[in-house]
Image (tube, rainbow, N blue to C red; front, side, top):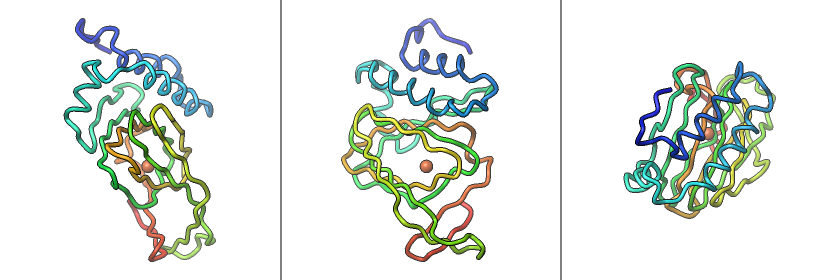
Length: 184
Ligand SMILES: [Fe+2]
């Protein structure tokens, strides 16, 4: 990875370097938890005036790709969500993700399916858990885990680490009111 002299020592470069150092073949079942710990460290050690973070905050984009690893394929996204921003329950197929809050509060609801999955296009869900991500709180979400996000206190600045490009895999989005499921 090319590191420009300007960015040397910046907490984001350091964080990415640490992930690359533990990545191995990418199949270690503990990897989501290792990335969680590294993200916690990055969030705690980055002040709002650090240039890369200041830029993310001032741009205020709902979604921004901060880094894509050319060798391992993982991606780090940054999101600035207005209060009330929400999405429908979805999964990330075979990928795992790590969500961490820098500021604001993001609620992540976890669901379990209550149907047998045998009827195509149909799915019923019940709420299984609620994670409240305030500043510095990070949770990994494992392959297939159904979840939705809601910016309960905004602006909610959220870091989302993707083990692989979600655009390249099959995953599903659920509509609990209609009891339906379809490709995301
Ligand atoms: Fe998600």
